[in-house]
Length: 202
Image 1 (cartoon, rainbow, N blue to C red):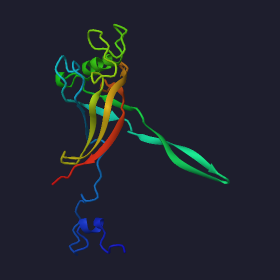
Image 2 (image 1 turned 180 degrees about the horizontal axis):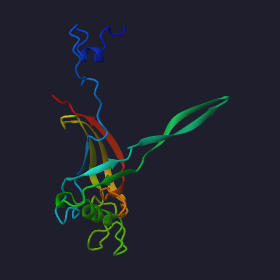
Image 3 (image 1 turned 90 degrees about the vertical axis):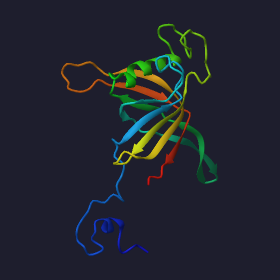
Image 4 (image 1 turned 120 degrees about the vertical axis):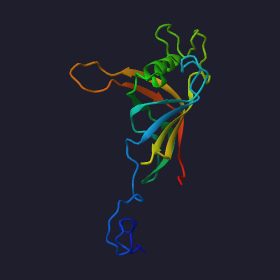
């Protein structure tokens, strides 16, 4: 049975007869601009020669995050039934917009990380700084990339965690005197699998 006093009506102070409306936070949604991007255990050397550590960069945009399964049909006489098949993630594109501050130097850190996949100056693929092959080792992938969704008071309410992350494409935005926008950097990431977590906020 449907409640006689829905949440929206109760939160606005109408159900108790006061008639004084107030802003409803119980039905509030997370804004698309309230997020942070964190990298855990990035490969050694990405942070300007430092040991593996966490990395937080200013991000302007994160493309939709998708993980799905293919479906395959099973034919039985006149019926066609579908079952879940091969799983797989989609690539994620992140646009970074803070490229000046040293502690959030996306250009340099993302380029050093991309060089682990392929270094154009040496021609090595999946190699470290001295050219030694480290294919298949943790020196290429970050343990986790987390997109944290924030409440209005900046508490983390939920996160989307991607595991086994590495940069696939490094793309600088165009240079144009005719615009009045910040310079950005687009990096396409591949990942192995994902999970979501919700945080209880007191």
